[in-house]
Length: 101
Image 1 (cartoon, rainbow, N blue to C red):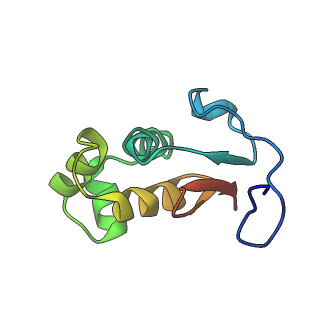
Image 2 (tube, helix red, strand yellow):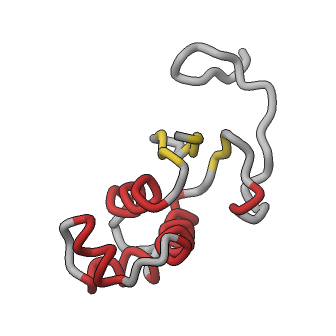
């Protein structure tokens, strides 16, 4: 049986998740372990410091540090919020599929 998206559309192919995020297609599945790097990449591209990003998200600077540098930490929701706030993507889970906003 073909794999389907939440809206019922058939998924006919997937791009590999190992490609660099900057060349990402409109829809791209990423692993949970990759979210930390993406969150950091987009925070940096937005021009915000960790302190400024923390204030924008209502958390502390050390929490941003943990979210960006420690993928093994259970901060997935914060990483998703960071990607959505600082990038042109929304994060759709539980497969963490990124779509253009």
